Length: 82
Image (cartoon, rainbow, N blue to C red; front, side, top):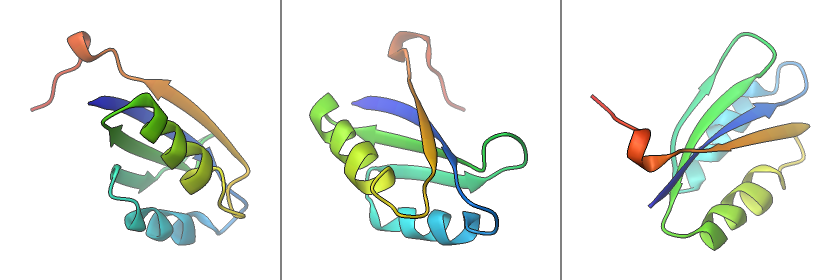
């Protein structure tokens, strides 16, 4: 499984709409609106890089409310969860 964190920038007052729209993608494990330079942080998991690309490029970047994204792939052997 490939895990990535995607930082999303959206126009003012569109965070809620984008966070809600991300629910339709089963690969999106978490999405949160945040304060700061980034408006939304999303955790995505997919079985392959090709499927991860589809979710990010078509599902997230394809949204008309998304201005920019920055994607960070997780180094799995240095990743832990509680």
